[in-house]
Amino acid sequence: MTLLQKNPTMELVDVSNSHRDEILKKIVKDLVMAMENNSVTEADLPLIANFVLNNIDTDQNHDQLIAHLDELSKRWPFFEKVEQLERGEVKEANEDRVEKNVLIMVKAGQTEQAISLAKSVMKV
Image (cartoon, rainbow, N blue to C red):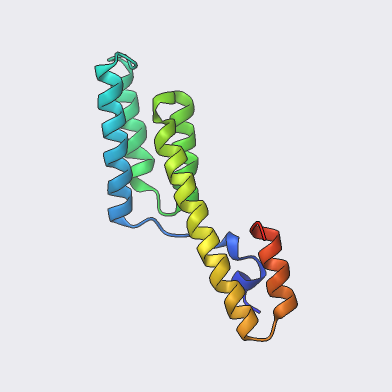
């Protein structure tokens, strides 16, 4: 049994450049909206840009990305939507990976382990 089959949710999923670019676009969109709504001060703009460029723009996996989005949204709450969307996408990807591993385990004759895995991770 592989490490992934033992604990399929512990696999770190890399963040592709295109996905990172999507996140950056969402951040910029929310930042522009916050500036239009006067929800952010001009003094915060360089701090936000620095944080995003030094952290989110360099994240290698979804765990890092979510941790940085969480920190970003705690400092500037108008970014919470981006964080929540990313958490949902990661959760969905993890569920897809678990579903595939359950099928692989069933195919390999590991029915009890597959049922246990499915129950521990998903609402079955």
